[in-house]
Image 1 (cartoon, rainbow, N blue to C red):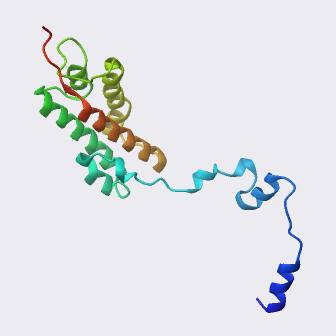
Image 2 (tube, rainbow, N blue to C red):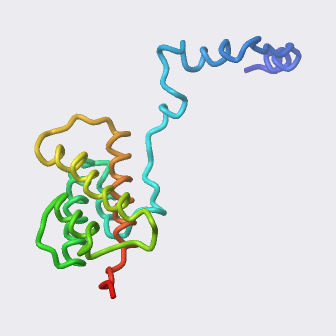
Image 3 (cartoon, rainbow, N blue to C red):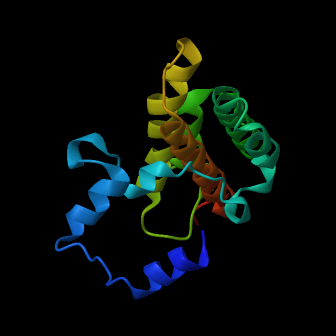
Length: 166
């Protein structure tokens, strides 16, 4: 730019759009063609909240998301088997670990059943399809699923061994 160009820009009256959408269309295009504004950003791993037991899986997530999620579910089963001594797999393991009168683990909250069902439901809804066929998910869905798995690890860590009723 020349000095004359800068002076012309400085002295020009501002051009303000009369309506917000007149301005934003120039950036994002018409409504039907654009993603929500946050859709332009790639999801990032929230490192501060990742359970240390799956940090290695989080580190490899961007290269191998499917593998990270599948290994994470296996690791969650192993953690619960180790804590409870149960020799079950999948939804049955989670049900025996967290529900019923002879459950091995519990939380110090009233929502025992709801938390327990999260484990079985997540396993059936996410791990089972992933283990039995190739899935075609977008990166955002995979990322969300990994964070759900991370939350199950957090809940497992909060669970305590159930004491026998008097």
